[in-house]
Length: 283
Image (cartoon, rainbow, N blue to C red; front, side, top):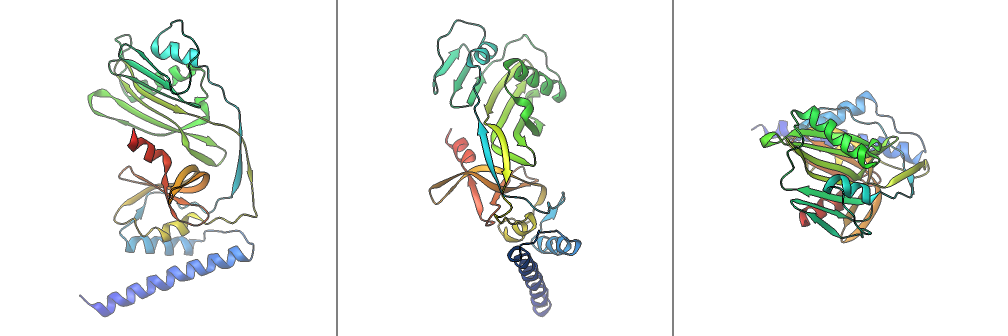
């Protein structure tokens, strides 16, 4: 190997990276906006390519810090239970209470419910992913939950004609990663359904609070190598940092072609550990 040539290549990449960061710091401290120029984009792509990383999406130029304002939300637990488990006279359904009817199980907990059915009935005949999606959304509509506040994040076919769907709540330009719908639909009905929702009333931007841009995160995330990046977006989530919980933290999400997701603070670029994923492992 020509070590002299390799050193020169690494030196050029190092100088390019520092020039990009220096320019951005100048823009931030001078109070200006951050604009992703063609040159900055090309330099970022060159640094990523040196790590074996390629982009299948555009790099978002900037984001604004904001304060999220929530409003009340009260789901109709009786209606949801009747639709998922079947009509029946029931008393008040408390948080944490598990209701079991045959092969079906339902649990509510603070604007969240989790439903499972080990053997969906024979009353439905669902063929194909589009029919499965429409069936799911019809059930959500019937339960009168605000599913139209969510955007479809992904859908895929699993084995045995089972289809998986995931939605996240969206408000203006922000995604709420903690608020989601996850479902598996089989040939005869719902196998599993999770729903979590908080009613976002408003998002008030705070231009005085500085954020870092997506390209800076891409430059900082040296832990990502030899993959393709399918998407980059920004939103709010809950994370842990050295045992401390961080709620409603603005963050960049980087979605990789292997199906995994990585989250980084929109203020520091620090890698974050989503509480949601930790809780899913604990289930």
